Length: 463
Ligand code: CUA
Image 1 (cartoon, protein in one colour):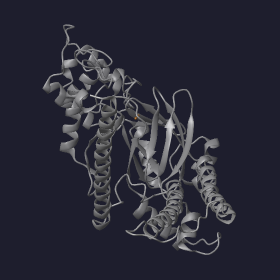
Image 2 (cartoon, protein in one colour):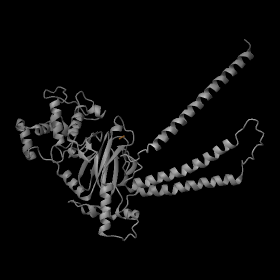
Image 3 (tube, rainbow, N blue to C red):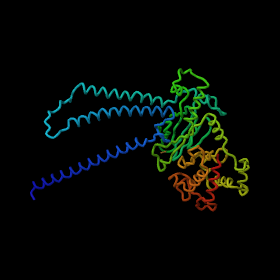
Image 4 (tube, rainbow, N blue to C red):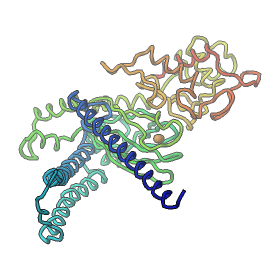
């Protein structure tokens, strides 16, 4: 076999391969284009629903609205660029494509035309400025918590025991991210809750964001975009569910900032009640380990009176199942635990003893349930979900709690905690979490079905 022959063979062979590849890439591309056209077509024809519970397109407050406006501005500008550049390109390749027996002369070449080049540079600068100015404005607006007198605690908070210097501050919530749940502390009010924050409608709320362990990200899409929680530093943001009175008035087209009447105030109150008063879904938006996808949270937006009532409930906490004082209950628990009967007492005894819940959980009112490693369980029975929003028992139609489902969720969480949220730190038999559960003889032992039943009933009663 001669050298020349080998080279020729090699070349022809490669050419065959290249042609084969090109053909396949082209047919792949065509299929891709067909698929995406069909997909977008289906979305539009099907009237794709943007009004989902975590939609960024149906905003409920000035922060999310500013971010949405900026997004849409960028979409329109880039869509314009796409049409201009893509249109010119399509025009050129169709009009000037080579035809069979084409004897047209070469069209005139515009390369290096100063008018075109300077024009394109100018247009690019102009478009960048059109995007940059509102972007910077938006960054400043969403960065600094606005000083809105109507949002100051003194202007709307009707509960008791507000330190005087707090009257000129907005509500502050410290958000702390844990693997994989959220703590919400209200320093001005001396309360802490977990996974379901409660905020007043139409009021600025200042958030301080910290992490206990790794980076998390706070994202409540209808109300505000994401801000990260970073270990070792405090980030801040502000949120507001619904507009304040001024902004709402402007949108209504009511003339003058001085415009003020009881009827207008009533309309504003109705707007908050009908459009804003609701239950909002949030989610950790930064990968943070095993159960990142199950690190949800909720925001319940309420009116001023409901907020004050909620604060009182959280501060008061819980008594013993049959109305004894806690001192008496603990005396019985130590001396004669068998005298504490009934499912709830049995559940509470488990909570304090064998199941070791109190080592990691606070239940306000109970002087010995003081653990801070896990979510605060004060009023956990009135929350709409457990396990950081992963197990839900809210009835969507009327916003009430499905008690059967709630019981099942508590039961499931205690029984199969690692199935519900892999990697969590609950007590377990066999270790893996904070430690191993043992029976009265000191041997490793899971909770029995009867024990889980009583604990679930007790937790459900915390409301
Ligand atoms: Cu926390 Cu992802």
